[in-house]
Length: 206
Image (cartoon, rainbow, N blue to C red; front, side, top):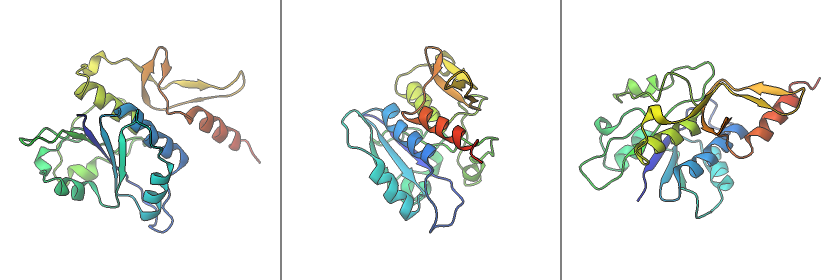
């Protein structure tokens, strides 16, 4: 039996217009790959439109973690699971005395970092760090899974920091984050390279 990972969606848009941007949709789908088929990924604090769109984007495949989308926030989900805020660390929910598996959660991915996790710390969540360099949210989940489930020490994981994604001789983009390494390359969500290239080309449209 795997773990359950909780991702608190922290957007500031109006409820009626809030949508999940394409890059976030790719990262959220990637989390299901990284978590693995025995685990669950819960996305919380979504608007109704974002919840419905995210649900519609997910495919049903046996090799992926199951996914659930909620309009309720992480506190509501913790309470619904009969857990206490004192059981939760900022990225890892510590095992309780019950049979439930730990959960992980994070607010990451801003450049420059805005310390969005402070919004949870003021509610009483203790903090845990995955390292000094900002990660994308899917990378943070993947690292958490490797440490907690696969029992690999944090300092034994191979990373690529601030990688340059090269599309051709003239076009490239530097990513301001840390990624899990696959050889010498960053582990990106499927479709992310194409999206980055598309966004890069849009920046040159006049």
